[in-house]
Structures are given as structure tokens and as C-alpha cells.
Image (cartoon, rainbow, N blue to C red; front, side, top):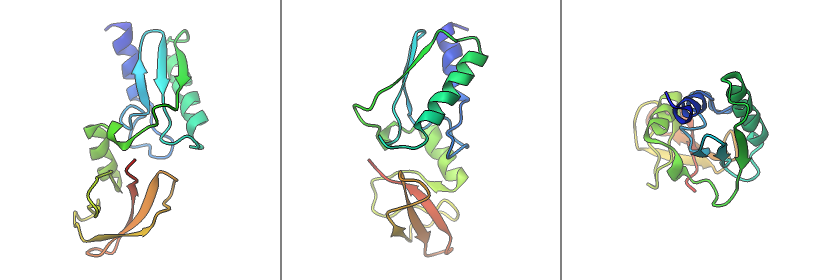
Length: 146
């Protein structure tokens, strides 16, 4: 296994601190990987988990023997939900969070119904909104599209 592949494997195992079912790679937070540097972009510029994510990546790289790999946080271009991988979207849904979709209604991650409504633009974190399923009456978070 090349160093680059080994670094990518390490990063794929670093969970998002707010949604541990997905990795920082699944969410598209990891933007670029070289043998010298890992470039990350938080889900939004004021994300309170940014420092923790950076520290988690640093610890994982150090533990795997990649202490020389730098970590750079960049804010431009800003993160977009388009960067979430298909595997990440599936993991979000399995975890109970509706993945982002440009459709007006979200699909309920509990029962699969499209008969849903946004309850509040503010969810459990600033990057999510609170939704409710009218079919099963369960509340759920949905990633805001941006």
C-alpha cells in the first residue's frame, strides 16, 4: 500500500464528532490529500467542531506514523453538501438523518415517506434543520442544502 493510500485509509476512519456514523471523508470535509498535506474545509465557517476535527485527524495521522503530514484548513470555496459522498448519504440515512436533497420535501429516514415538513430551520447543529414526518410522526434532522 502506498503512503497516499495509507493516509487516505486513516482519514476514512476518522468519524465526524457530531455524526459518528460518517467519517470526515464521507462528509466531504477532507478536500485534498497528498503525502505532504491534508486539506480540510468545515461544513460552515463558524462550525464549533472544526478544531476538534483537526485534532482528531492529527491524532489519527500521528498514531499511524504520519507525523510529517500537515493539515491545512481552507474556507474557500466553502463546503457544500454536494461534497457528501454517496456512501455518506446512505450512512446519514441509516443513522436517522435525511441526507441533503434539492427536493422541497425530505424523505423520512425512519419510514421512507415523502409526506414531511420542516418544523424549524434550526436543528441539532447549525448545518441541519428540524423536520417531522407526517406519516410516522417522528422528528428528524435534515442536512441543509448549501
